[in-house]
Length: 177
Image (cartoon, rainbow, N blue to C red; front, side, top):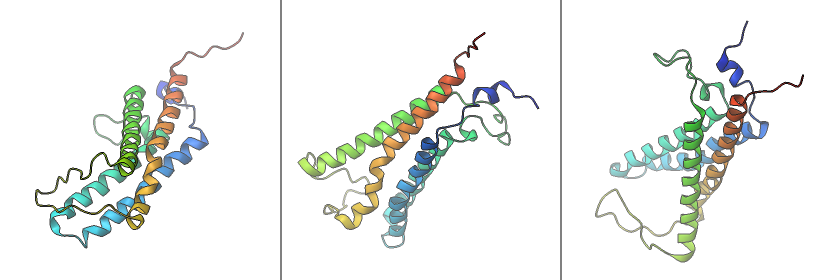
C-alpha cells in the first residue's frame, strides 16, 4: 500500500493538547446552546426561531473545530460528490479559524468592558421595535455563558497547531547524508 502525496503531506499527527482543546470547544459552547434551546419552549414564538438558530449555528461552528485535528479537516471525504478526495488548502482554513477566534475574543472583551464601563446602555434588539429593555442578566444566566470566554483562545490555539502541521508538511525535508 503506497501513500499518496496528500497522505504524506498530513502524516504529522496533531499535538495531544490540540486534540483536547478541539474537543473542549463544543463542551464550552454546549451550556449556552442548551440554555437557549430550553427557552424555545418557554418564550413566545417570535423569538423561538432566533434562539434555536443561534444554538444550532454556535454548536455547528464549535463542532467544526474538530476538523482541525481530524482527517476530514484536511481532505474532503470520498463520499462527497464531485469534491471527494480533494485536499483542503490549509491557508484559508487557518485564516478563517484565526479570524473567527479573534472575533470571539473581541466579543467577549467588549461584553466584559461594556459591563464594567457601560459604553452602551442598551444594545441592538434585532427582534422587533417594541421589544422591551431587559435588565442585565445575573449569574443565573451568565453561568451558561461563562465557558464561552475560552472558545476564541481555544480555536486560535488549535488553528495555530493546524497551520504548523501544514507548514511542516509543505516544507521540503532534508535528510543528512
